[in-house]
Length: 292
Ligand code: FES
Image (cartoon, rainbow, N blue to C red; front, top):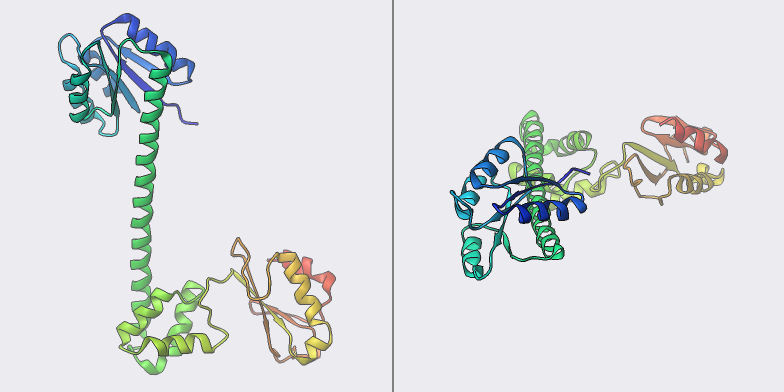
């Protein structure tokens, strides 16, 4: 786990060392400084998650220290330490950018609680940033996908008569037909979305759901059915932990039944990607899957 560093700035030695002891006992890494100026120097050489700052310091006061620390690291969480009767000033400090305050004299629990609250704030901020980053990446992915589809459409001169070939190319690229891309095709080619959907759903070669890296077609045509095709399907379902029509959790395999694949003499037949496995018996299934 990454070490959390906390800077304590207070001119009272007892307070500084007290905070250090309390926080180190909670496994935080602590640096101390007796003036704001020294605290700023320390903050320039290391990254601190939080700073506990005495409001009344000789020289530069706590508010000015918060300002300077924020200039060095805008993510630092400043917590004000305030003396008796100066809670109003501490509230002012919070308005000026402090995250919270703790009043002297404080108990170890009060210090630990205020630091815990600061950590929650840091975690929430990080989660918010990660979410934003994820959204940004998704938007970039979407733009990249749209430009790939635009290239495919241009290759076919936006010709509606080439719709099947266009959808084949899109599926080849993305492994399935994402709905946002189908909408883009309809819009760009100025054809009804219902037409794009009816073609995408009519041909079994098209899939509107993400498919696995390897496509397993189990033939359940008459000849294969009679020669145990269903047993092969059940064995594949057991081995992969999915049902007919599903994709494995790791998106490695998609399993589906198909009608006669045209080599009944080899029944029962399973086609994985473009490879035919004929005269199959259940016991061979694990060995065949292991190849992929
Ligand atoms: S029925 Fe399976 S290949 Fe013909």
